[in-house]
Amino acid sequence: MKDLIIIGGGAAGITAGIYAARKYIDALLITSDFTGQIGKSSWVENYPGLKKITGLDLIKNFKEHLDMFPLEKKAFENIEKIEKTQGGFSVVTDEGAYETRALIIASGNIPRKLNVKNEDKFLGKGVSYCVTCDEAGYKGKTVAVTGGGNAGFEAAIELGRFCEKVYLLETADALAADMILQKEAEENNKIEIIVSVDILSFAGAETLEKVVFINKKTQETKELKIEGCFVEIGTCPNTDFVKGFLDLNEKGEIKVDPINFETSVPGCFAAGDVNNLPGKQIVIACGQGASALLSAYKYLNNNND
Amino acid sequence: MEKYKNIIVYSSPDCAYCYTLKEYLKSKDVAYGEANIYDDVVEYENMKKFSGQDSVPVLFCDGKFVIGWDKEKVNELLGL
Image (tube, rainbow over all chains, first blue to last red; front, side, top):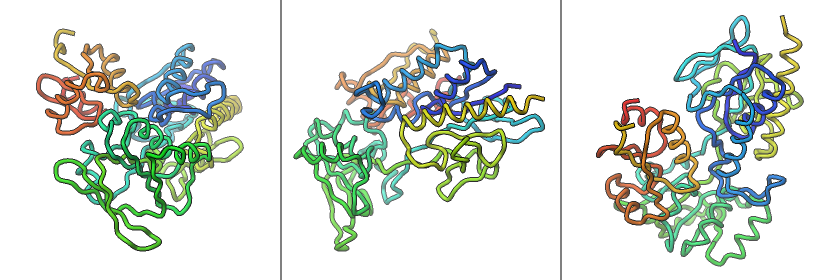
C-alpha cells in the first residue's frame, strides 16, 4: 500500500508530486497523460518567471522538473473508479488496482463540445477542439473561433497570424477574456468579434463550409462562410470516476474545503481545475497542488496507526 | 522493433495529443517515423486523402490508421 496516490499529470498533480517527492512520501502519481489543459494552450504569458512560452513547452518543463525526483509514476492509465477501503482507498485503472492511505485528485478537465447539429459530422473536416494541433491547414483561409474567454481570444490571435479572416463568436453579451487579449484582438483587423450569438449548426458538403447562428438580441438567423471552426467554449471537470463517491457541485466539480482542499471523504483531497474553487489558472492550480499535498502530509502524520 | 517498421505518426509541433501518442509509443518501445504536417505539405495531403480528415495526430500502420490519441485503438492497431 502506498501512503499517497496523486491522480493527474497537469499543473496541480505535478506540483503535488514534486512536493511529495521532496518530503520522501511513499507516493505514486497516476495519469492518463502529462499534458493537462496547459499543453493545449497556444502560449502562456501569465506564469511568473516565464515571460512567454508555448503551453506544450511549459508542461514539458513541469514534467522534466518532476523527473528530477524518484517519484513512482504510472502514465497512460485511465482511472475507472475509486473505492473506500479499511486502510484508505482503492484506485482502479484500466491497467490495474492500487491501494493507498491518502489521495489527491488533480484530474483536471476536458474540453466542452458545442452540442449543435453537424458538429460531429465535420470533426476533422473543419471542426476542431485543438488550435495547436490543427491550425496548419488553415493558412490563408477564413475561420471562426467560438468562445470569448481567454482560450478563445488566444486561439483567435494565433489564427489571426496567418488566416485571411477570423470570426470570434461569443454567446454572452460581454467578453470574459483578459483585457490585454481583447486589446490585441481588436487591434488585428483580420479578427471580427461578434457577441450575443447562439450557434445553431454547421453546414457543408464534404467539409465545413459555413456556420449558422442566431443573434440573440435581434433573433435574426445568419450564416458565415468559413472553412474551419475552433471550439474554445470552456471545459467540464474530469470527475466521472468519482460520481457517487465524492460530493460534487451542479457543474460536476469536486466540493472541497477552501482551506485544506479536503473533499467530502476524509483523506481524499482535490486540487486544480477539478475542484469547485474559482480561478481556473495554471499558477492557481500549482498553488492548490502544493497546498493539497501539505494537507495530505498532515493527514498522514495524524493518522499514522 | 522490426515488427513495427511501417508506422508513421502524422503530427504538428505544438500538438499535445501528438506528444502523448509519441510518448506512449516510446514507452512501448515502438519505433515510428514522423511526418510533420507543418513542414511536409505532400505528407499532409497524403494524410488527408487516406484518413478523410485534417486533424492530427494520425497513427498509420500498414494501410490502417487511428485518428486522434486513443490508447485502446492504438493498442488494437499495433497489437499491444
